[in-house]
Image (cartoon, rainbow, N blue to C red):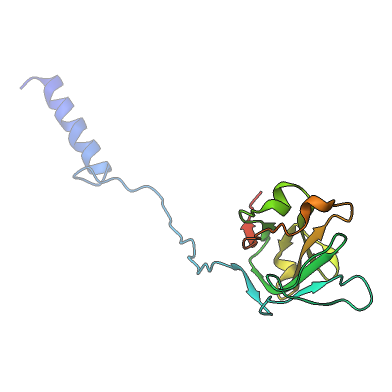
Amino acid sequence: MNRSTKGAIAAAAAAALLLGGAGSLAYWSDSDAVDGDTFTAGSLSLTALNDCDEWNLDTDEPGGQPFVPGTDRLVPGDVVTKLCTFTVDAVGTHLRATVEAVPGTDSGDLLTSGPLTIGSSLEIAATPVTEITEDNDGDTLTVAVTVTFDSASGNTSQTDSAVLDDIDIDTTQDHN
């Protein structure tokens, strides 16, 4: 073997010894853990507080009285109201949800010819609402459904009828 080859072999052996042999080289290192945790989902629902069966005639006037659709008859100027109450379940950090009354498919001559209108309002603590948050958890949501017979309705509306389908109270979580 020539001298330069022997020198190269010697240098390679020395480097292997300095590195700890067999190619293992230790660098400084450390590790630590990121703690896991438990995550639980909130909730959003409405629970009916009353059976929501009763309609009342002219509740804004003294002497408002129960009204039985299908038996009692409307006259122009009548306003019939149904009040329904719900407990709000709104649990979740920064929960926000829309709440609205969604009418069904109403039908009948009193609706198509125009003298009868259907309306609704939603309130918590006598304040109109379209949105609920976790601050409303446990509050009472009052829904008023009104049927108004136009006082200017003419003779052509006599004996006409209308069918009011269910009105759904929808809550939809909104994460903006």
